[in-house]
Length: 314
Image (spheres, one colour):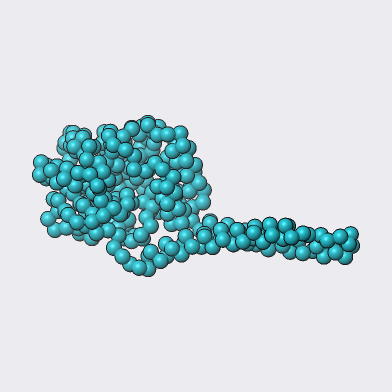
């Protein structure tokens, strides 16, 4: 059994074509398969379309959240409900081509537990999006202790034991692109050209959307921001010690005119205050994530299910 998991947010125009292309590829392989669509609080007719696809084809199964919980949580729900021996994560917008599934499955049958798609090119993306994505992947790889593959997204195939390992990790602020390399096992990449969206608008293109995602990635897998705050504190303390020595020497052996004025003192105080607030902000980011964890709330709440007899086996 091969499970294909696709989070859905306002994708009513894409879903019939996604089903058609997935069915066309998987039917030619002769493998049993299921398409698990996770409706992440869509405001259009996505839930209705998923229900209709389930009536037409029992291999299409649907999960509908009570509200929008976010892409990473939607993927997690898909993993919770997927029953396949291998699970393929993909975007619903068809930027990740179903025609690559046979190559991924072939690598899996060779013995690889994770087969991820490596983006050779990205059609339809702005220069800003391409530049920031390239910078982000290289930055996160440098500051973490895990080997996160460059130029990869969530498009990947995972063996059942990898899925079970991911499901055992209950953290709220999730970064699956780091969690999958963290679990280890045998992993390899398959290059592909990422297409433009089949229809609709991108849900993940603005700085407002990308920045929280980047912060989750950094705070989940790196202590570097906290270490930088410590280093900055030591640097400022050393600078202050040198300044004290310099002031004493000037007072003892220099001219009798005042050394420092009110403006200089004000600038120094404001600068040190800014440094302190930055450090507190960094600590606050980590503390906020700890607060999310200790509350122990469920990752998601389900409104409707289509095609699942006994619900999740989690």
